[in-house]
Length: 235
Ligand code: BTN
Image (cartoon, rainbow, N blue to C red; front, top):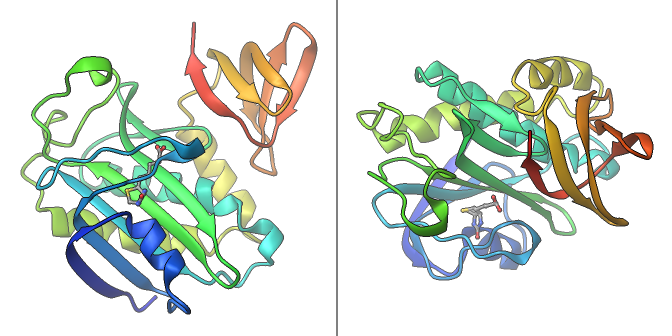
């Protein structure tokens, strides 16, 4: 894709800004040095420290039918994990789309859609020297993983290159994406708890299915989840 990069000092949220724009062009990338109300999934706040994080959003107009756009969340998590691996950091994807290193979250993804576009938001921890409070032991950064030397612009360009490839594999080539995602799945074989629309569930993760859904062996039998929140490894 031909990316158009725009960098701003401060904005409420790069996702919100691209959504507000009447007609963002496919390939528009908006990167903010700081966000005043960065958003995470399920309405959570996303706090990123200026100079230490990469926070950006990409407007995409996938060729795939709109019903398949939710798969972009998986494509994006995978793209980031692949990019990190190219930069020497073995990353895993915690379904649906958190990127982990050594079980700690290095990147979060928020995909939203407007009438015409999918807005892919990425928040990546680059230069944090540590995390305090409730993030201690839960979050990590490239710096903490030993690659604080990689210039953020290099991280951005590798991520965008991977995103370009994987975001085009949400339709007929989705199997390729799933195969790779299974290789990077942080949850396989783990006991997890998760929140689905009908409540909390707990069980052992069997696999990611061909449609990108998570199969879990629960007390109520084998169940498949198309979406879930608060996915936690509990054993
Ligand atoms: C999550 O893990 O809950 C998703 C976090 C997504 C954060 C990114 S930072 C760039 C973009 N703008 C936002 O307001 N959120 C996303």
